[in-house]
Structures are given as structure tokens and as C-alpha cells.
Image 1 (tube, one colour):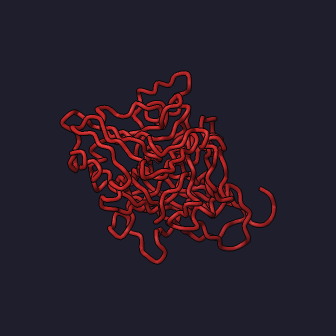
Image 2 (spheres, helix red, strand yellow):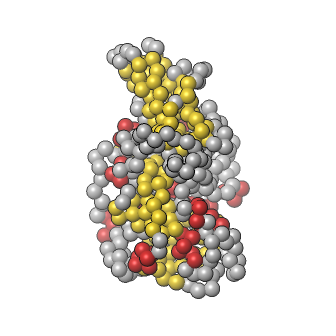
Image 3 (tube, rainbow, N blue to C red):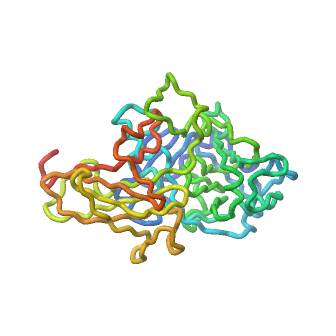
Length: 393
């Protein structure tokens, strides 16, 4: 593709905020501290988690940069940035979450394979760009199409990004055509993040944003879009990011028995406290986030200070001073909510949080019940230990 420099230029890393906790340097993967994560409902770009599978591409000539649309359609087309920017611009507030969020805690139960993440491998941004449904109309695919005349049922996104798992080939993923052509699904070809052009870490100059779905399907540094009959056969669709039961290990795994993970389950975590904290005597404030996939709002967040024996409901909000009503037009359906509760802590306590979404999905109690060999989707109750005073736990 014109305007892209070779791998030797990838070594120039973008500037990054010192608050980030680096989980791996090559490829670069990092997350903010817990307190930084919940410092703002819209996550500043500097604090937004960085997830990569290979060197970060450099695209330095956006006038020559283009995205090819091809596959099971009548007419292929090359789209330049000026073409995409001519389409109606939409802004969508959406939380992206890595499927490996909270993997480190899962690995303490039994060893898992993958980059270690604490609880901050997610972030909430205001994405700006064209709706994919409008882009596909340019090649003759109407809204709400499930199959093209040529038999296309899936939309594959191919990245400029090269990774070892694809034997040096590009990162790729797909979503169903029915989702891609539904304007209500809010799938974007995004060129802005929080009102500014995307930076290199987050996919400059153009990326896909698939709200409500694990971050692995929101392909960055978009190179091409293919309309295909079957779901993408790439590594990260077929041999990764699938949810297996705890009985499956690396000796008996059969990847073909599980579908690629799409929506993420209901999730919450406490961000105002570390795994082990010492606090002053008196009332403390417990804060964190809750989010569910598929556009499902958060109906309730429960907090316990006795390990889950008794519970109190936390308050929920997105923007300060604006009541949060799950599933209401005043709320951001693709975005997280923050929760807050106050409690008097006894001498020592295990504080627990669990969320319930509008479909009454609730987080499972134990890590063991959702353990899987790749360490994805740890949505078990989030627990932290607190002690009053200065003594060590």
C-alpha cells in the first residue's frame, strides 16, 4: 500500500505516558494504573490501554493511503481518506476491552498462556468516523443485508500490521455481514479518537471500531475489507480468542469445536483499591467500572465488604450529575458505567464487586468456574483485601 514505510521504520516507538504499566515491550502492551483508569468517564488517549501483536506500522502519506473493498461483491473499490471523510460523520462513545483483561488474576489459579493484564485492559473513548454500513453501500450492499448476491456473509478486516502468529502476514478478523450493514450496530471506520486524529498506537490513520465486541475484532491500521462466504480463517479468529471449558488443556484442545468470541460478558472491577490496601479507620469510598457487551446496559452493581455474604447496591453513573438509566436514550449503550459505594471497614475485610446487566447476566463467583487455558474473559467477582491501620497483611 502506498504511504507505508518498511519494517525498519517501525522501531521508532510513539511517545507514551509514564503512568502506563508495561506488560510486554515487544510487541508493546501496556495499561494504566487503576486510579488513572477511572479518573475520567472518557479515557484520555494517554491512559487508554495499548494492545499489539506486532511492530506498530507507520503510515506517513494519508493522501496516497487507501483501503480496498473486494470479495463477493459486483464491483471492487479503493477508498481513499477523502472518500471516507465525505460520508456522514458519526461519533460513538464505546468501551473497548481486551479479551485478556484480568488475565493475571486467572493465572494465579492455574497457569494460562498470554500477556498478563491487571484490570485496566479497557478504555472508553468517543470514536469519530464513517459507519461501515454507509461504506458498504458504496459497493452496492444495502443496509440490513445478511448475504450478498454472490454469497458473502462476513466482512473481513485486514490490517497493515504484521505478526508472527500469521507467519509474518497481516492481522485480520471478521464480523457477520448482518452486523456490518446494520447502522444501529454503530460499527465505524474511525479516524478520530476523543475529537483528535487517531495516533499511531490506536490505528492511525484508520481503524475499525466494533462496539460491544472484544477488542480483537476492532482491527487497527486498516488495509483492506473483504466480503467473504465464511468467517475469517486468520489465526486470531480460529486459533485464539475462543472460550474453552476448564477441562481443556494444550494436549486435548480442538480449536474447531468453539466459535470465535465476539460479545464480551458482563464485567466489573474495583479501581479505587489495589489487591491489598491499608486504609485509615472510618468510612471509605469504593469506586470502579462495570460494562457488558452487545450494547447491554448495567442494571445493578453490588458491593460486599464481607467476602460476598451480604451486599449493598452501589450508585451507577456515566457523566457526573446525569442519572444513568440502562437502555435509555440518554445513556451511552456501548460504554461502561462507573460505580461508587461507601462503607465502614472493620479491622480487615474482603471487598467484592459484581455487576448485573439488563439481561440479568451476572458475573460468576469464582475464577475456577471460568478458567481457560488462554486466560480470556475473567469476569469472576472482583475481590480486594483491605486492612485498617499500618500493619502488613
